[in-house]
Image 1 (cartoon, rainbow, N blue to C red):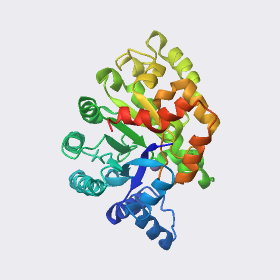
Image 2: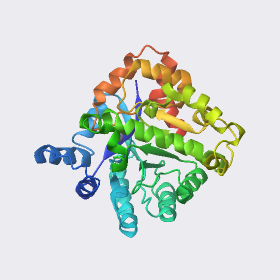
Image 3: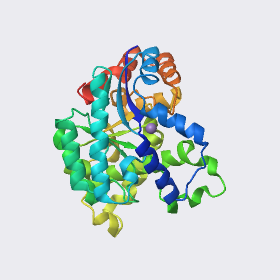
Length: 333
Ligand code: MN
């Protein structure tokens, strides 16, 4: 079954250095085997020797490629982030041009400078043909729903392209809950909770009322949201009834319910979550038209992702939508 994969990463030596400095800064300097680290950079920066053969083996006709975390969002200085984002997007464009039938791109954005980030998104979509942007969670501990970032959402809505919200390491203040259990960090648990919470913040912020055309993509089968959405909605309704606390009253009242936004403005992907029961739950809660195939290359195996969707006991037409049709329509491929 032909597939378009939408959370597939690349990196460069320079982005690897940004990542090192960033993990040190947040006190999560996970000591990595230098040899393994170099091999990961080689795989991430490659488009042809490792990547294309794996895509071929799994019937992945196209990868929509994005940076690995934290990309330029790990930089402290705004103007440095602006300059590097432009250079990295140009590099990705050049790589895509070598195999335009096999690759498409999501822009990396210098969120430290929201107006410049909005302009960079516009340049990437209009001049480089990118399909949207992928942002890595918070930027120097500011969350993407905050008012200062709304120019980016406004630009994405005007350009009719989605923003993919990808995990990043949390603010060190948030990690106390995991004290004594470092194995819960990262993809095991922390990223899902962190990113799912940010997606909920975006929904509650009113961004989708201000910009009804804005579109959000969330990976890992929705970062736990499909399973928890009923309870979220139920207690959200109680919390806001009668206006709720001042902090809620000061915000503009939402026009729709959280579930409505998830079914109209949000898409989820299968990246790194190859559970059939979770897939069925997501399809039932959000609808099969809102699910896109993704691997999370090279952090997950293409073959595992591919076998999972091909062998899942869901209707064949769902598979066709998830593997290909939904991405083709959403990203105008
Ligand atoms: Mn990823």
